[in-house]
Length: 356
Image 1 (cartoon, rainbow, N blue to C red):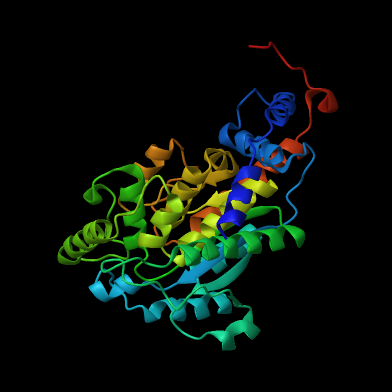
Image 2: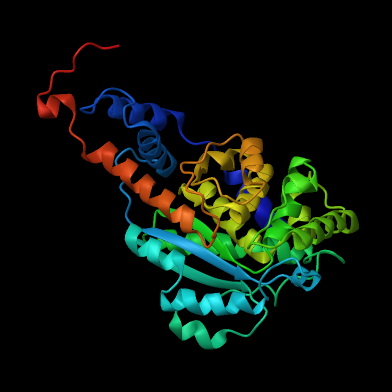
């Protein structure tokens, strides 16, 4: 497993500077003032450069929603019981969740993956659930490691393989999302360890807990870090000790995107924990990621600043599931269409005016 991960990381190369320059030249020749479509131009340029082909079009959009339970919920850190995870999985499969509505609008397919729900959901395979269970929920990080190192790499491999299968099936634009009651707690622990920030700076109310529960949650995150002593120089160690299977799954999609040349749109608080680990494993991964939005979840903006990225949107969202990421995927598709479908000055016989 370690050898497989090292081979993946070694194969990740920087995005082609030549294609970025060529795409910019095309954008600058379109019937508009240079740069006047702002970040939509950036998205179109990055899409083709990541894909390695100036003429590449978006052929298929998919969001991977990884579902996982967390043993730390027994510490009373969430406003909802863990059973809600499996209930929401069923809601996803029936098309009734926020991610379903937004994905239908954006023209994206939703793939729901049981990577660690604490229940046997095999009866839902016939309804479209993808079962790639690494375990029946993680262990309680307040008392010990969330998972073994082997399980951590296995969760990464699950995400990687699903992304690879999606590319082979014709999808060439990915987004990631998650569902897991209690998962803001391990994400806060990952944030604190990887950024060196105080736990209070990166731990918020999650699903809407009260002041007393927030205080308890902060103490639980501190205890998790103290008990497990994750090594920030080893992101796999951090994932195994204070992370979650869904965090590993999304991390695997990101590594696959970077190795295979597919843009991956990142959602909010939880998926940014995956991005933080992915970029720490290989800094070039950041160039393959598109950060969709600034979550309203407390601490997210702090980590975006740490990563040095500017998200596309700020809509006050904090649902998760990949909802913000799919909006970012839709905008990326629009950027690609601008690059390829707008007329050039010569095509339209429009005077360029004076170059500035």
